[in-house]
Image 1 (tube, rainbow, N blue to C red):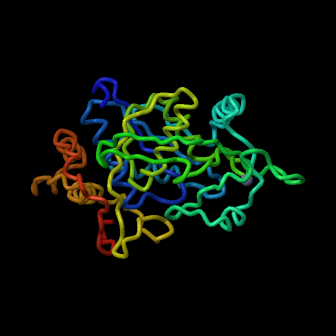
Image 2: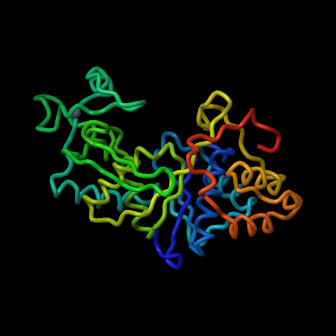
Image 3: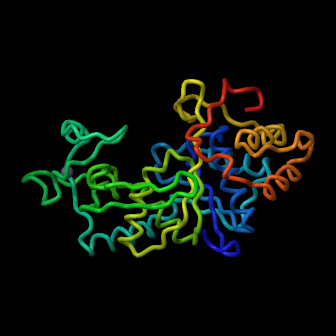
Length: 306
Ligand SMILES: [Zn+2]
């Protein structure tokens, strides 16, 4: 782990809707870890995927964070305003010969039958050049025979053979937008992030991000992936699974519940305290180790507080 004095963490929501309980828990985990280490905590709005961005959602999320006492320390970065930085990184990959154009449609890749979990593994069709008469849709990075291993502060040693588990992956999408995997590492480096604390749904994207960091000569932060909050059907809370937004009218109650949920065992009398007092206790007593060996955090049907 990095020196406490230099700790810089961040919360990076996508503005596709209001903050729900799962994203509040992720925000709180990264905030508490940063503040426990006397660090800086930043917020980045990941509004790069413009087709999915909902107008007004970013302001709504920021309003909720403020209502919950989660104040960020420096100016907010918006990915939609960072295209030049992603272009520069992409250009470096191109000059180094690390990326190539790909003409394959999603259907063609799906038909190749290589699948890992929910993700399609690209079979490398265009690696040695596109077939005659085809035009480039996306740009992919060559992964060669790279195996990436890293030690996650919560999930332990994670190892991924990029060739068989991810394949050459997209860095510039067919719709002209830069891929999340590229944008996130460019931004983490630009913001000097030393510690990434986020949901475990991103655990298996991390080796691809580390690979890009190495290609671009960027530092790799420490990672800690928190268990994902799931509903009673075992689905990750999200807009797609109709997760209820957190409400701003009684943040102290919901914050207390979020701490219980993160297995922090706040004393019962704290429930009636102000949000500042609850957070003060939580920062001083933050113990992410309470979540070890826990892969999912199920909640029952959303309660009034959530
Ligand atoms: Zn292709």
